Amino acid sequence: MKAAVKTGGPVEVLHRLREEGLIRHIGFSTHGSLDIILQALNTNLFSFVNLHYYYFFQRNLAAVRLAGEKDIGVFIISPNEKGGLLWKPSRKVEQTCHPLTAIEFNGRFCLSHPEITTLSMGIHEPEHFSQNLSILNGEDYTSQAMRDTRARMDAPLSGVSDLCTLCGECLPCPEEINIPEVLRFRNLLEAYDMVDYGKFRYNMFEGEGHWFPGNFASKCTECGDCLPRCPEKLEIPKLLKETHKELFDRNAWVKNQFFQLAVSVAKFLRKFIRGRV
Ligand code: SF4
Ligand code: SF4
Image 1 (cartoon, rainbow, N blue to C red):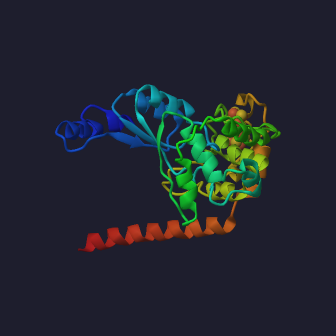
Image 2 (cartoon, helix red, strand yellow):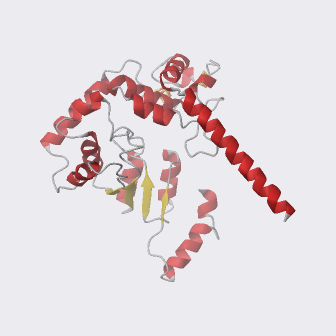
Image 3 (spheres, rainbow, N blue to C red):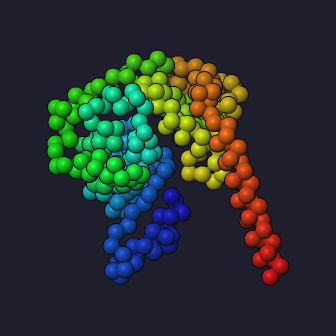
């Protein structure tokens, strides 16, 4: 972030291009921590932000609010996929948000925040089109019906034993385990049986150069560093290992290792061939 906004850096160049009329708006897209997003918004150099914020991931609420205060447009990245694999919700999610579908519920949840201006839908099947379109029906997203659905959706989470509040106080972990994110998947498994989503996201850990940082929870050495920092007094190593057992997909891991090996070989060959030309 510092490199982007420093004097003479790329954002300054973008502002010059804007003054010359070559571009109209300057914003940023982020998978970063809340702290970094707030710092970037507070530079007052941007007029829009693309970020992750959904019913099943509300960590960035403070950034959404700050953007609203500064009249910065908020674009939500991948609400239907990264937001919970909502085109194939668990049976429990499907039943709890009925008569809305998971896509409709989450879209309305997002748009109930007046700061949020854009949702990027990423439609996978033709039948999802009408669900996405129905979100934009001009209704009041804070209606009593919506509040009732929201209360039904909130209830399972409040009943989870050993709930992680995602406060992040346990970090850093010397083994670079993204503890709050692993335990977020555990919360969603316990509350909503979200196995497919948990597996989809959990198995993104340890991707080379990936934007989703963190090692698998199996790397926990039980050093105990995180324990005194957790205000909920959670047995973090035990919960991590249980979650790894539930979500780790060996086949996906082996495939990923082959893919990374193929990428490294391709890079090496490219360099080798360039060196000989
Ligand atoms: S106990 Fe495990 S999760 Fe906690 S800091 Fe040590 S290695 Fe990380
Ligand atoms: S400190 Fe405890 S409650 Fe907070 S994120 Fe870490 S494990 Fe969860």
